[in-house]
Amino acid sequence: MQIDMHFYGVYALARAAGIKDSIAGKIAYASQFVDDSIDDDHIVLSDNRSIVPTMTSHKPIDYQNALPGDQWKVWIPFHFLPGYKGKNFIDRLVCEKDSVPARNMLDYTLDSANASFWPHIIGIAAHVYADTFAHYGFIGISHDNNKVDEGTLSISPRHSSGIIRYMKAKYEEFKTRFISGFAEAIPVGHGAVGTYPDRPYLAWGYTYELRRDGSRKKKVSRDNLKDFLEGSKRLHEYFKRFAQLDPRHGDAGSGKDWGKIKPAVHDILKTEGTKEKRIDKWLEHLEKGTFCKTTHADKKIKYDEGLWRPRRAELEHGKTAAIEKTDACRFIRAARRYRNFVLSELLPDIGLTLP
Image 1: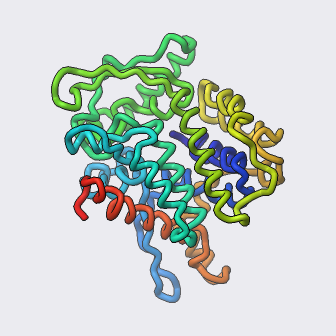
Image 2: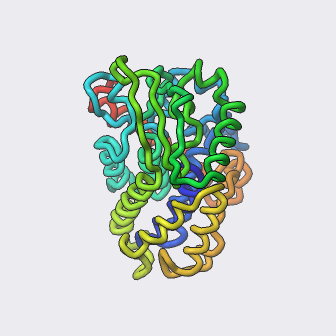
Image 3: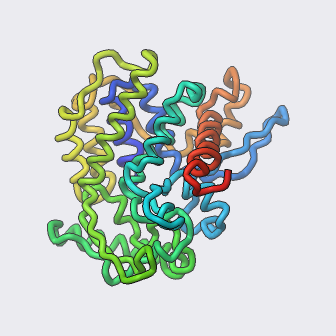
């Protein structure tokens, strides 16, 4: 998924779940920042304390994508949570939408033991869970089972010729910049199919080069609109659970049931073309009160990629009561807490990593 869903969609769904604007903003920011937290340089403060970032993503052609250890620390926990289906180890690493491990992960983040990491860990979990509805069928490590027969990549004729041309051009651009040679040598995640899984309106298909068991090829048909709509409903449910944990999270009387917002969400997700078009629609619906009682913050919501950078915390050092309370530091701590749970508890419990 992209910023239109991870930030603006998450914000709207959190508001519709009855979460107040300030908390929803942090949840949405944490959700999108999972894709943007690529800093790995330690920051040493004037008092000699250090900020040690928790990387939650890499750029597509970053050499670290090729490192097995980094794939396990970044792509597996934050972008391709294993679904634990199938009979062998590799099959069980395949990301699956709304999987049992994904649901267990959501339950963990809602546990009161994690209250000190709220709402940042809620946004991180929302990103990971949402991605299961887009990234399913692929694995977060370098493996031949991620390879796709390029000649079989197709777009449904239900789309206009203009959109088909647009998507093919985007794929060629992606292939030129990132895939050529790199994805063949390092087949991590859905790189072989470009951004097709991340476009909420797209109906498309492909054929794996090999079946999961190494036998004949397997043809796959995908309907992103259906998947994203299902994912949006589940996120709304998750956010409602969070809102009910503490009255301080809520905006009394502001939330709306899924049935009331579903038509608007469907209308936004089916909007073809650039992500900016869908962002505009999320904002339009927020302003006119589709998701909640509109506040000033709802009208001004906007993502700033640099807001939670570790360097930002360094600049704020001495200007705030405690640097530990900055969103940059709180995100780092929440991401570390989340990753430790996935790699040290969730996956070992199902035999996918050693305890």
